[in-house]
Length: 203
Ligand code: URA
Ligand code: SF4
Image 1: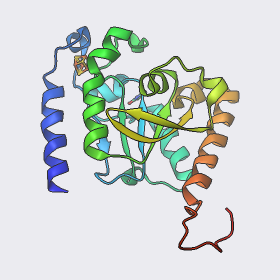
Image 2 (image 1 turned 90 degrees about the vertical axis):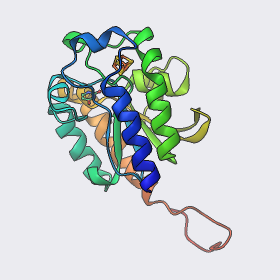
Image 3 (image 1 turned 90 degrees about the horizontal axis):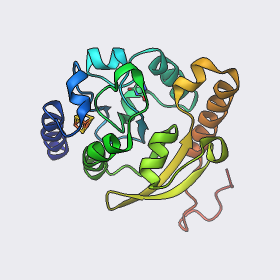
Image 4 (image 1 turned 135 degrees about the vertical axis):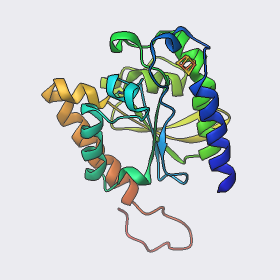
């Protein structure tokens, strides 16, 4: 456990001084990620926004408040999960990160996945889903589903949903997000059906 903390701290120190892509020039603080060292799941967003850039913490603005309530609806407290983003520095004007920026930053996300070894990862939006799956993703077509994912040499389940910011501006996306997180909650509550308890009822 101490090992994980040290490894994460070392990676975070590297990120705080990173200049591997142009986004370092406009950042106030890099946003590494935060949460449990033994997370029930890992959430991956797109990039820090302005409040995140000022505080150095992920999802602390309006989208973050929505995320906190969505997590609660799935029976999760923020302290139980680990939250990070595809790129660790804020793109100017909150534009979508460029492919060369997500590529340059990918080793940090890979490091976080290797250190934390999550069994379940939630991709928040297209950018996270595409980077994790290594292919273009249309969230409207694939959200609310769990799929197998191999990333950073690890295998885990990936649950796809919209980016919480999308839920702030569109009622339709908001209902989809709410429905997806209720599904996520059911998925977490579902007992793994193991041979040792063959009579457990299907959930
Ligand atoms: N949007 C993101 O994708 N990440 C944050 O940390 C905040 C807003
Ligand atoms: Fe480095 Fe990532 Fe920041 Fe680019 S976004 S400077 S790769 S930490």
